[in-house]
Length: 481
Ligand SMILES: [Zn+2]
Image 1 (cartoon, rainbow, N blue to C red):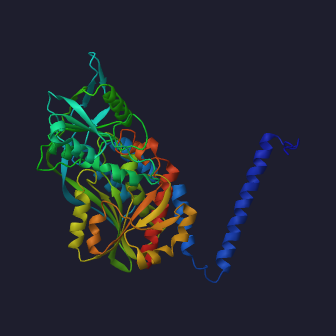
Image 2 (tube, protein in one colour):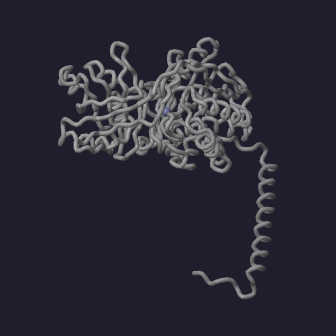
């Protein structure tokens, strides 16, 4: 029950008394702590749980991941390979890792594809009564445009490749193929739905071209119905023409499908001016803390620095970059020297080429070092849930002995299989790979779309990911694998 302050205290005198009390409390704690430290013959051995708690407290109170993410998103902005943004991101992350006190920070040169989107895309559904409905679209990554004049053609809708093959050349030639394959909502882990539906974005345009189509419209890979078109990589097949292709928002995919049922002969006017320029010089950025006992055993940890051009790349993959760099900061600030070498890598060009990941492994092969472990964060800056490893069996059993150390910080499972796109090329070197798996329910609301912005990332969730990553890297650096 609240009784109010005694009458003898004015608000001010209470305040002064309270401050005095607080001050005395601090002096007492100070003396008490001094007594404990000096009276104990040797400080009790710090357990791994203690160290991880220290890492966690430091990141939660003094972390810089969120601020660094702000810089990447708001000051650098979109970072597609070959763009000025990508070059600036290289400079900024180099500076960040130097400021964190990495023993060395260096660049790895890599030639990257240089694709440009060109002018704002147009994709108008002709409704027949002289009216048009502008579909919300964006050109798919690495595709060639329609040319300035654009194209006008009828549309055939298919749900999958089987339906496309059944229609065959007779029905498809000269048309625009509309791949309307939703991400399957029954998958609980949304990456599984992405894996299954993703083939229509990556191979759909090439398959449509095989049957003589002049263009492709692909339903966005998004978990929900919204009006953002989600871009992503498309691969042509050299045997067929490179036809223009766009992603359409899920909302407009639904609209288009309904419109085509009423008006099967409807046409679309499509105009895109995207194109592939000659390869450009770019870089991976590597920050290193050398190991004290086994400097030639390398632990790689990273995310990809490039992003699609129409967003800030906050979840994909600014989050993974700043979480990885945070490991350098926290180890340096806590004065922890790892036994094995830790390399934090900002991989370039994951989105539309994977050249950075391949280059890193190519150089690794020549280094005469042991690349024992690689950890990647490229699944969003959401609350961490699991670590997924490339190895099962005895390796996973050994790793699982650490699992209980992670439970207080949100990681509830060590699973297999796992890994990541950028660290994948290290596998032939015998590297054990691991991917951080955050909660995936909201990832495909933002993935490769204009709403993948800084504001979509929670500071707390981002930091929790960094804590778990730093803890795992700490354990591997201490015990090896
Ligand atoms: Zn990514």
